[in-house]
Length: 186
Image (cartoon, rainbow, N blue to C red; front, side, top):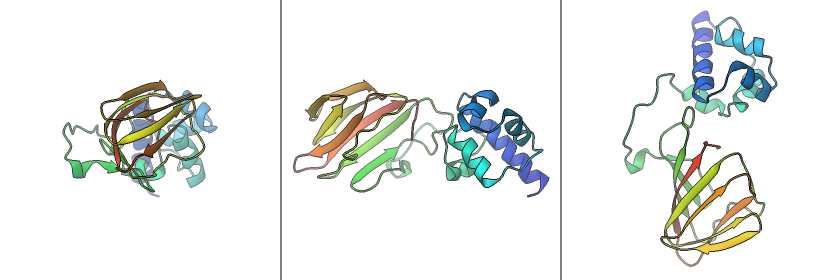
């Protein structure tokens, strides 16, 4: 890797870290990589191994592909056409994200579409955030902790995402939900 590539990687890492609101120390603590190493990488003086870079990025958190696709320039886009929403879902669950990257954003907005039978999985999950949403069409069953409720069009939810939760489409038609999560977590 040339010095220019190392400088670019360092500048990119600094921008990603700062957009996530992390100091070098905080990122070092989260990733298990020494603060001095992060400092040297950001200064363009050290070229990290793939493994070290992966550990550092997990501390942000941001994936390798998002990291290398990230532009240190702030995204100035305000409006998004439907075809510009980024698909991050799978297996009957479409999660269309507003914007291309979560790095540097304080909130994630999704258009969620649950096909008949779609489910976030039998194991409830939790993460550091708050989330809320409004059902636009169809019906969705939501578990939060030991509470369970089926919501239909116009119904809404809002909860602390550290509580274990799960979503499952119910009924004959797909379910659409517009949701927000802060801070972005996936």
